[in-house]
Image 1 (tube, rainbow, N blue to C red):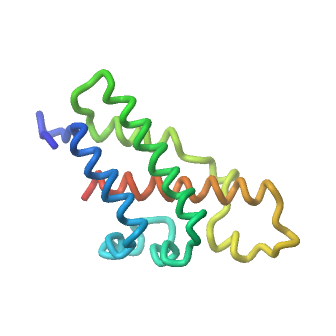
Image 2 (spheres, helix red, strand yellow):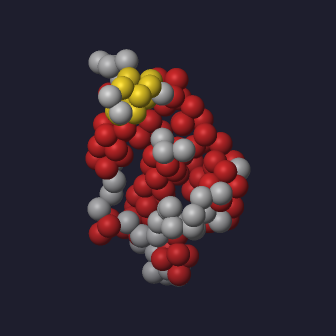
Length: 138
């Protein structure tokens, strides 16, 4: 990471490091437990409970944000945190199109619809984006 005129710039190696840390956090969520409980909009302990297919969906969210950031690096050698934040925000799902882990767990099998599954997948992918974005501030 470089600091120029008081602004932080991330090079490809920095972004790769954050990406690897985010992926590792799915294997070892204790990396995220060191932060305040209010840092994330989800309970970090949830990552211990998720089955592998749902963790794969979280990783899709990490990959989406990483790919979007990498695309920004095709024309630059380093990008500002502001650009990373714009990428992060551009991928966020509107609240009306997602349901949280807690809401999903309360849904009975009979009440579960295709829309419920899509909303839950959207939420899981946003969790992945949250995790990767967090590592740019560590």
